Amino acid sequence: MRPTKKRGAWLAAAMVLLALAAWLMSRGDREKPTVRPRKIEFPRHPKPAEQQRASRRRTLPPLPAPSPDVEAPQPRRDPVLVALPADPKRSAMVFEIEALKESPIMQIWLDCMLSRGEDRAGFARFKDRFGIDVLEDVERAATSSTGLVVLQGSFEGATFDRERWTTRTYGEKGIVYEEKDTGRVVATWGPDLLIAEPRAEPGLVEDAIDRLESTDPAQGSVLQQHQAYSDVYGVLSPDDLSNMLPSEQDQLAERIRETVERVEIHVDASEDVAVVAEVAGPAGQEMKDLSKLFGAALSLGRLNAKREGNDELAELLDYARVKTETQRRSGESKPEGQRFSVDVALPVELLKNLGPCRRDRSDPDRDVEAEPEPAPPG
Image: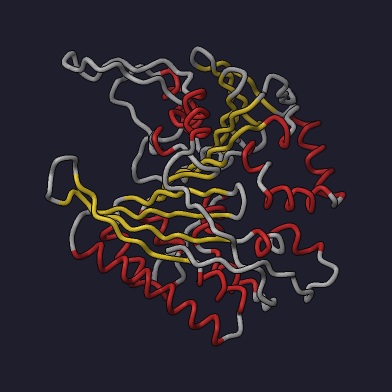
């Protein structure tokens, strides 16, 4: 039996994206089938607008070349990615708040939240206390399994009560605030970055500022610049992915820890929600066997859902697929690695009855008018 680990907000979000099936079953829902998703384009490559967005965000100067022999110009860097921990054994997720606010599902969920007085009051209290409008001032949010949170947006008006927070400068551009009662640390770095560590673990915020101001050519990030596309993106460590699985999947969890090198996640929410989780590892039979285990788990879950009458879950799993691909270096025939992707299509009509909208439905057994069914993703 694997030990239970404390999961942070970043892990809860990843669980919704990667393990929505288990989440639905745990809620005990037995709703009638919703509509099937329309033809969905899965986020495997950046769109032109996302390439422009990524280029615009590279505001940090290039690092020095790693050696005098390197003549190629070094790229400018994205400060949010640089601030994240560099340990490849860690996980990190980035949420494009501006893009998500315009997505159909988030507009529906926000309408549900803002229609309730307690949620509106909560946003207002946060703005009164810290001078930050969560819905207007935050452009994107990055979270890490270390507990570090990095927000990018407009924070010129951020305020911290001097009776509750101590203030000190750190580095060239950092201002660090520490809450006297809890030891929690928040920092601003320039006018558009806010860095926080809710667990009050010492040094994480200062380490992030050190990375932002470092000129060490060897420094890296857990999340690379070419991975910064779609509405939600990130990487999961094998340990974190295995810990998300239920206890009855111990065998699969152990295979993940032994075989997987990394898991890259991309979510597109511009229409219906499309999730791609790319699982990468060494070339060989182990990765092939692991992809078959994932496929078998999906098939078994589909059969169990139908047997138990959970039509909502069965429909979801109908649109989950496992695809396998062998990686090769350019000009070489010998495989460099193996990867497979788990693709999940989540229709808005299914998702809108989850989350904050769930509590607002006056008739939980009502039917949803279905749209024409497309072919499942090939």
